[in-house]
Image (cartoon, rainbow, N blue to C red):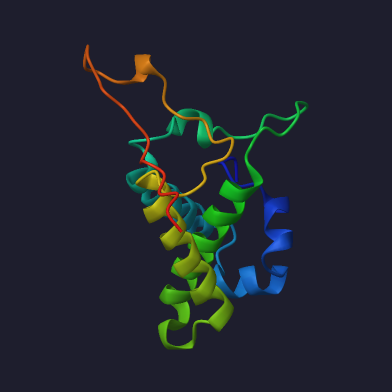
Length: 144
């Protein structure tokens, strides 16, 4: 599979036998479809604020891996949740549901600018089609 997620990325999130259970195909077509679906879902929530081409650029062999580990983990969490719903919707593990819901909450808050994007690649002024754009961050509330 030559997408954003590489085969060795799954080792932190799930075991090989679980992946085989979720995607019984020889060429891993279900995993590839779930990856595209998860990335599409994330792009719809985060595209207003972040540069999607940089965020989801695949790793290049022989060069340092520049992918954000949190983004890789979030894509895998969403992928595995969608794969579980296709195999056994009523028997989704509690951990999978919790991690999927955490990913959704993060995308909602970060897409609005409320979350800490950290070192995510934000869009530059050239990325916006309009000639004039006013942008500001949400005001801090320092009243205790």
